Structures are given as C-alpha cells and as structure tokens.
Length: 401
Image 1: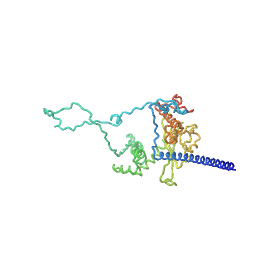
Image 2 (image 1 turned 180 degrees about the horizontal axis):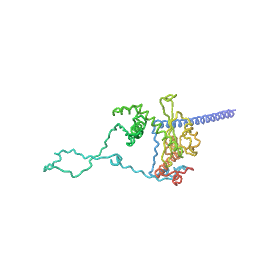
Image 3 (image 1 turned 30 degrees about the vertical axis):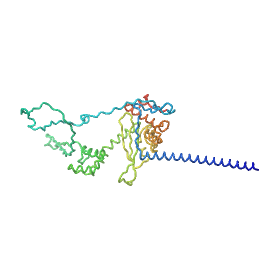
Image 4 (image 1 turned 90 degrees about the vertical axis):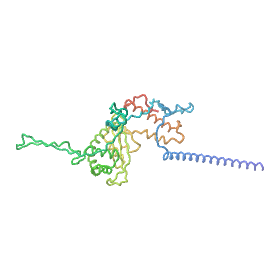
C-alpha cells in the first residue's frame, strides 16, 4: 500500500514537472516574441528619428583615394563570401581649384584704366632743390568693380518719304516711305530689350511685376504691371509657342527621355478651387551626346493620359526614366527605366542602425553597388564617351550578377 502511494506521488510530481516545463517553454517563447517585437519597434523608432531629425545627405564617402572597393580593409576571415563586387575603376584625385586673380575672374567684362591725379603742385615739388618733378612711369595700384545703374531711354523712329523727281508733275507721281522694321508688338511701345529685361527679372530673379512697376516709377517711367503681363502673354503666344513646339518635335525624336511631375497651385483657374492641385511636368532628353532639351508642360490633373498625349508621336523603343507612378504605363511606346538614385535612397533607409559597415547586409551591398555605378558614370562623363563607347568600354559594372 505504501509503495502504491509513493508511485502515485511520483507520477503527480512528474506531471507537475512536465506542466512546469511546458509553462516555462511558453513563457520563454512569449518573451522571445516580445523581445523581437521590441527590437522591431526600436528599429522603426530609430528609422523615424533619422527620417525626421537626422541628416538627409546621401553623399557617398570613399574610404581610400582612388579605390571604391570597401572590402579590402577587412581581415581575411571577416570578408563576406558572396558580395556584388564589380571591378575597380581608377579614380583621378581632384585637385583643389586655384583661386583666380581679379583679371581672370572678371575677364569677360569691359575694362578701362584711369590715371590717378590726386597730388597737388606742391606735392610734386622736390623738397631738396625745389624743382618740379616729372613723370617717369606708371603702375597698377588697385582694381575695383563699378556698378552702372540701368537706364531707360525713349527712341523715336523717323520715317523718310521719297518721291520720284521725274514723275512729280505727272498724273501719277511716285512715292515710297521707309517704315523700318516692324514693332515687337504692333501698337505697343515695348521693345525687345525692355521685355527681355522684364521677363528675366520675373522668371529668372523671381521679382513680381508689381515690384518691377515700383522700380520703373523710380526711373521716372510709369510702366504698369497690367501692360507688362499683357506683353508677356502676347509674346508667349506669338513668338515662344512656335519655338516650344519646335523643341517638342525634336524631343520626340530622341531615344532617351527623363520625366517627372510636381504639384502646384494655380489661382483663379476657371471652374476650379484655388486649393486644388494642378501639376507641372518636366521632360528632359538623356545624355546621348546631343544638345539637351528641357521642356515643361502644365496639366490640371495627374492622369496618365496627360503623359500619353505629351509624348504622342515618338517612335517605339524609347527609354523613359521616371519614378514608379503607374501613369507612365500609359506610354506603350516607351521602355520604363528605374532611377538608381531613388533605389539607393531606399537602400540607405533599409540599413538598420549600427549596420552601416556590415558588408554582408544586402542593403549595404546594394548601396555599394550603386556607388560603383555612379563612379562609372562620372568617369564616362569625364571621358565624354557616347553611348556606343560606354557599351563597349571594358571598364563597366557586371550587371549579370
């Protein structure tokens, strides 16, 4: 009976131990899960802190001059086994630019020399013998840049009328008048130089027309902002639009294009609230060895149909570099290309804090590979290689890995 009681107690103790082991295992798993969640939350918090409060620079740092391969400094046992590692490209060390002299810095502006004459007759008298001193040479003592304020002047064109002296007494006297070149805008007093000055200040220096109106008043010229706006619109329609259309046709002939858009707000647009987003698109030709063409296009919406209409007429097979916006898929003639600057940005964000030098991490490898691609691009630009030369160059990244 006693043995039977002990057996029961032993069985109960074994069951209790088994239950305790199960409970401990469950608690350990819960703690591990909680720890993993805490690590994830810490990583997310560090990412948000870096995103909102950290430096946003994406500058690439080369550890060794002329060497982009960051794995050479590692101990042999620490080197990662399988990494993206294109061949090394020799990089020329950039020397510090020498500060130019005043003559070199301002070589493109007119220069005139002025002989100084500040000495009095008494100053030019010899203190020893009293004789009058004579000039024996000159030298440059200083140089300065002088600003001449802009000025306006009114020009009146006088037309001359000519008559035939032999026909003046006949029934059909002959006359001709020299009317000169036509005005930029018929019936307006604006000249090419004045309007170019207004447009440059508005769109190049961002000086609004009402401030330019005040500047003209100080120059005794009451030129109103309404007139200036009217001139800009007329010239845009009559002169700039044909030029824009020409460059648009030339752009559609190119084989490499880049495109992006940004939201803007347009005031007093018909049937639209001022808070409604409109879009301004920029299209640029790629580096194909020809002169670059950069065009802007305004649309009231971001619909992909706007992209399709703007690029309508280009030949199939054009390489189009843009972001991941699905509206670009409307352009069936184009081959979509990704931007490695954007890819590198996301790879940088994917690197956990403290793992920037962990060369086995896939995100770090991706950043290094992007750096290598950018270095090839820089060297190709320095050598002024065209697309065919870049393709056949032995120094290029191995994209097959």
